[in-house]
Length: 78
Image 1 (cartoon, one colour):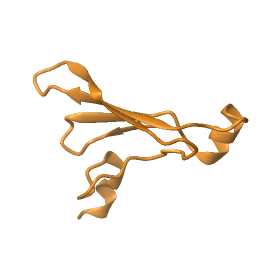
Image 2 (cartoon, rainbow, N blue to C red; image 1 turned 30 degrees about the vertical axis):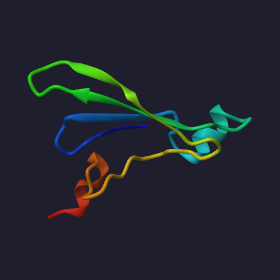
Image 3 (tube, rainbow, N blue to C red; image 1 turned 120 degrees about the horizontal axis):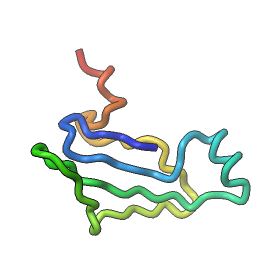
């Protein structure tokens, strides 16, 4: 899954999509992870080598940050 922060400065990637798809692509189970890329407003992107979350048997589908700081949370605000 890919999520962009609402300010467009961070992009989060996980190796999990949706449970039905995960079961199809990872029939033996899945050890989830999430990484982050920092986006420069003036152009360019940089992989954050200090940001790695490992979830063991959990599946990190969507990224939801405090304050609704994810692209999929936009519908929560008017």
